[in-house]
Length: 286
Image (cartoon, rainbow, N blue to C red; front, top):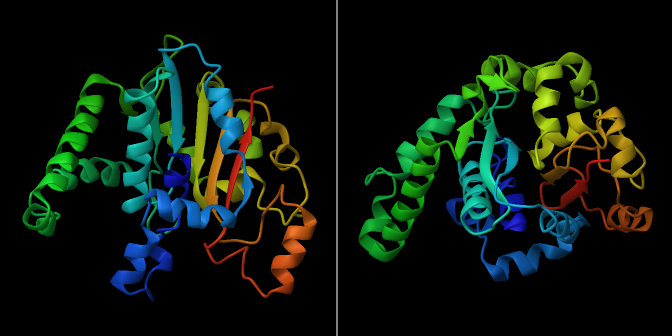
């Protein structure tokens, strides 16, 4: 599930303008075979570490926060992973999704994108070929998305803009979201948005999706590749259990053995920016 959610980030609308529909279909393949084939492209892989951590949680009642990246297929995979956590594991009972109030890049999830996704997936005209070619798949999709809709109605899923209270104090969820499009690295979260930091500090797991979030987590600094992930997080390290799922689309990358990076460079791989390679980086609460 982690890897499915990770590779959802490869479907970045701003990078797909040159691809044919068949290329996009291949990119969106998330089956077992596709995941096994892509495993070699994960240069930092903390999947086992994060699952070992999750299994230590005393559920139910845990909360997971998703700091979102792209709308479209990636958001779909975020919903699938979130649903798995609350429906098929005993560790979480609430998922909070953090959108941006406006797109930093063209396809960033906004509150409107979030709400439209559910409506679109339940529309019989959104995927008309599924109903005609595979009624069974259409039925499975409808059942799953209606469950997501129920999660939203019951408060199991919540959009962070709808948060109105933290520790019995009134808050404005939209104000919390402003930090995501501010000019600061996430190093400055505690001082620049203390309520947001306080909210995430109480989370059992915070998942940061995508390249922009990774860049802001690490200060957008071109660290030596062997730099520890915790070091690159600066003062944010240890504030809350943090999982970053990112396909590489910018120069910054850490916690990769120097010899691995040197080999990729020697082979002429555009591994830092192509979206072909990925990082799964976990840092626990200290």
